[in-house]
Length: 423
Image (cartoon, rainbow, N blue to C red; front, side, top):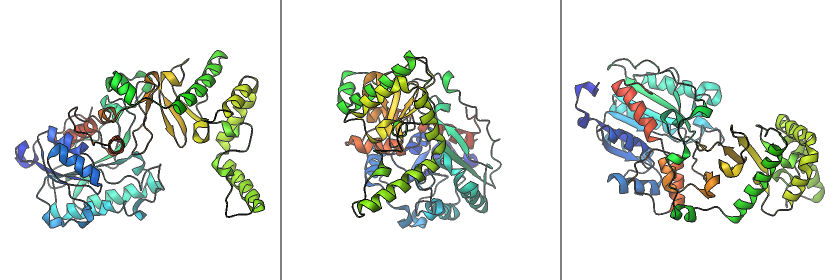
């Protein structure tokens, strides 16, 4: 089904909060033409121009709506931080959350045939569902059909080896017709995935040397490998709850809650730290109790490992925490994919990576002893192999973490416009 009977090459789209162009790649592959793009990030604008020959506008709130060229499709991966579990979840109280209403103003003036929006999975449940209710009501008021709930999709659905859940909102102007039936979204059985991280890796000397892990990383991995080996050798199942070793035999000593505040007296610090410990325990009682029960049940096998590990200068802070999300048995960190995160070391099976984020949590390939390269991170977003990267690796990592997945968007566009099956 072509829009209003037009030819594909006459269909224009705008790319708001464009980043480095995940939407652009998906829509241009279908023959659609980008006539306007916008992003507040200067480095993203530079990368976008290098790849597509279009210089995006800056802050969309400072762009004259009337001067945006005529278009048929509005695409927007509007800022997710106000709705993400990783942030404060201030939603529409965050000025970035209010950018949704800027999108509404543009839609109200230009009245495109189609709208496709992307955000974090948490958008659907944020503020007990009130955020989604507000978004849906505004879409209907503007004269568009949308589903009763967003499509909650994972990059794994599209044979991409990255567990990346996103909320995708598809909208059709009411005078054009009805949306296709809401698709049945299959449950992902991660133990039965056909994809592999090897599908996106470049196992060559250049990458293995350039992105190799540090000596600190190697020491930390060795410590946790020893822990996993002890459990495996004794037929002890690795806990699936977060492992917090600082709470095994203490009340969180050596953690941030025990830091002294230089503005307080010693006596005031003692009182404050005691209260911090109580508050933290009350908040995470379930996990702390499970940790202590696990340690006490296996103390004869783990006490020596724990004491020796604490003597290692590299083993500190969040590196003393482990989130074991591995299905395969009798393996350790060196066999898997993992990331160093503020919540601990998150370990997953080697057939897919954790969600890429716009921070420094770059996945490590244990069996290659290195981090993913920027190019490999873009492979996880299904970007074209000839995509021109930023000259700065740190910038590319951030841009890849913020990008929308090309394959996911391509499937959604084909569902919305051409009524093709989503899967």
